[in-house]
Image 1 (spheres, rainbow, N blue to C red):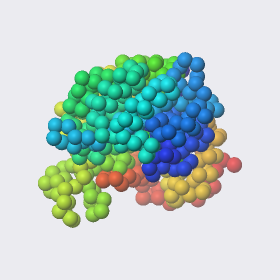
Image 2: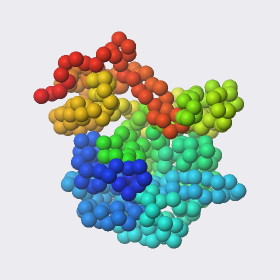
Image 3: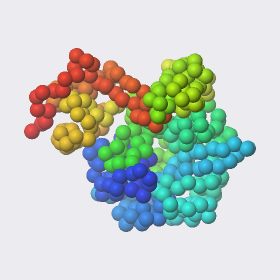
Image 4: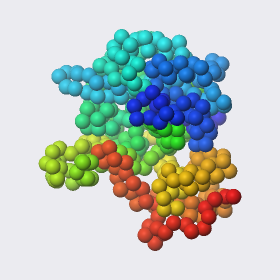
Length: 412
């Protein structure tokens, strides 16, 4: 069966997350978004784990769980801050597990290395290699996925905190890595520039901190809804069963370009090089973004497509498209109302943005929303890239189209 999976989110017990990140709300938004399988996030936090055990029902021997027809997979993110070979590193890793029994063992192990009750995403002084060693000692069924692998401050390849190779980080456990998460500021095409990554499946997840953001990046499979089947598909990088990923335009991510947020300075890596990496406003080193780091490690030209690559689709969230047609912010009441009208009428946001034909969209949706979806599909956009923690901005309509639609953009 074909399904959409978002493995990486956070609960209300993580820093800077919505209080609405609870199982009932997540299940409701999963249906609106069109996400069939959702990571629980934060299984290391004792209070969240209690809620997971309360709400989620095991689905036979599938290694998955359900709440009101939404499927869940037990997941967590671990923040590691550690020293190795005289250098400090900060790396995030995602763990997926098929049972509460395994989760309990993992949490017992982690609690001996630090305070896992302090936050939904605990900070531990464990190296990547040590995490892999301890987790796989507990169970070979656990999936290990390096998180948002290019983020400057907290990732395995981060320009400010990471390694130059997976082997340097994970040692003899490198071969046990299930997949790599590209993160919001990179897409598969950027990762294809590095040949050493070819053997790994590249997954995309929302890393959502609020229910309305789940599914903004996701993975589309055509296989059995089963933990071990999904693990096998990812490990074997099976293009017949792992169909494609759903991506942000990477320029919209918070760390695509180089720059200094406090100085309002946004640079392409070429500009950074011409200034010797120093901010022209304050004189300090700029934060090097994902594009610069990818180019630094790349051994292939931009545009190279390796054999066996899993495809992807770049999307702009539906509420952003609606907001631009109305000339208001995406959180405005009229945007929320229009969004709910559309997804409730046409099944889900994923169905609208990906599954429906353009002919169906043109004949069924408000005119300017239909035009916006077509422009996104054709990648006819104006994008100001994100940098140093600031999201990029996407403009769908040009100056000649800037005026918001005057007609009523609702279905009812």
